[in-house]
Image (cartoon, rainbow, N blue to C red; front, side, top):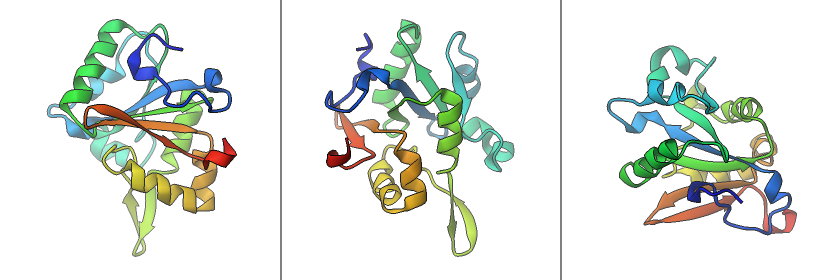
Length: 174
């Protein structure tokens, strides 16, 4: 179990819990000015932009959600900064756990970013913790997105002064 409270898992009954990597998605659109470049250039921390190599990259890179891998070696100063953001900017951070590497996870999450609406591609802000509950339910109903989220068994967000945990699978499948 990780020393950092941000990396706690809500349910120890999940299969292979110790094999899961801890990640967070940090939504830079919640901040003015955006901390995008500061976060992307953290020494010793694996960070990728969810908008990298997508149509959103050109116009809104500084506002993009970024995927950050958290480990035992993550500097305490960085963890303290994230804790401060959590309380000040509700909706800006979503936690998730997966066995995937950060690059594989980033590629999978990018598949969830866009959907068709009335024949047009639209951005799906699933990474905003204020809408993840409904988005995750939608993802569970469709075979394509369900296959993607199966590799991300645990999700969490902070609201009303506590962490809320969500599961990608039904309890009987865990």
